[in-house]
Length: 447
Image (cartoon, rainbow, N blue to C red; front, side, top):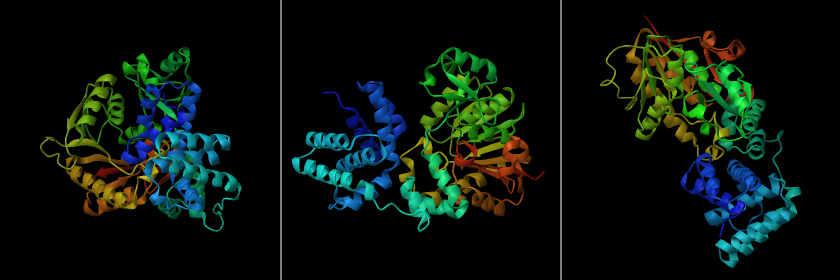
């Protein structure tokens, strides 16, 4: 028997919470396999992403009204409750529909006692939903932002210390908005004007990018990767924040570039375009599957000067045979700047992970520094917003490598962004800049 929209949502929510599957990969696949119509697919998408995004707040509400401790509620039942509470509190769904459908699913998948428990708890929440004791911003701003805008409390406190209350609230609000779809035009094969006109003729809504001429903002009305222009390498799906990194690297035709943790290849192929496909780019990644994807994108985009290499970024001596003009270390990070693209990710991150990543990032920079030729450039970037992974990494690196210094990135950024450069580095914020959160530092080796 075909599954309903709510059953599909429950399946995805549960797999993501239980196994760490990526919702943005699992849900489209599951929808494709279903027999749901367009309206039900939209409902399933909103319900799935909303439930994952609001997990902490939904648990907080359930704890308020459940006589059963939340830790004793079976995982699948808890996911059903989360999904149902999300409908009751945050969606335009009649209360009776949310409750009744949850009971129907309970009777189908669980024993009668579970159905009775689900029914009783949800009806209790419906009766008391107008009296939920929401936190007050003036009394406890961190808890208020955490509960009202769906972010872990530790993360909110960290951002308040770094950015202040108002910017932190704006950040969390931005994380809950649907992500923008931006593409980078392959200037080796077309121009932004020509490709934009072509896409508009095929029914796509296209606007110029916010900061860069090669960027186009696409209003998502389908899977753009199915277009022949994508398969033929006329564009790459990439946020403008990532495009800015290549401009800060500033690769020149004829140079040798090393791209660390390069997969899936967005920055490698962009730099090849900026270099007019003249020179060499050595693109390194440790994951064999990601290296295969890197090779595919290099070929698709026609970046003939790039070679993909499977290697550990901290063990590159056997590979690098000569000094490198410029190195890009877009290092593994906590990804707190791209939470709008991974609604579930905020609940899987921990402060301990950030500390571990900070040490790894420092190790990567120190391991590649010797390959930079005298007078050459090392660019460090991460798509996150934590001080430990950004400024502190640069500071630790410079304490060890006194032959490097921070070179002001302002010259390499669009003029509108230069006012936000601090100490020669920039932290892009989704709330302020309208693109993914990203940190970029440009380090120059003394000649």
